[in-house]
Image (cartoon, rainbow, N blue to C red; front, side, top):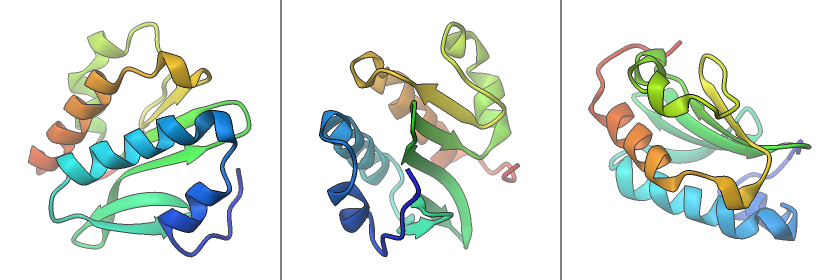
Length: 120
């Protein structure tokens, strides 16, 4: 979904209804597990940045809910847990909101917070 929203609240007003609960839960997990990060809209999606670098983001796209973990080290450290989930270097794609692994996301967010690695 391409969005011109100026805030995450505005972004969430325009997502498909069947994805809203999942996106709200992802947002809550970001806020809880990324203390001190700035929530903003970067690259037209909800983003969480520390020291001016976006480290985590999410988006409602045409076919998927995507989670962006921009510290590649975090993705590599969890490659076994990501098996069977559609993902790339820094993106995890969930075509079905009911199949989102929130425990995995929580752990990825926590690890991103603790990591001093550079973003990819």
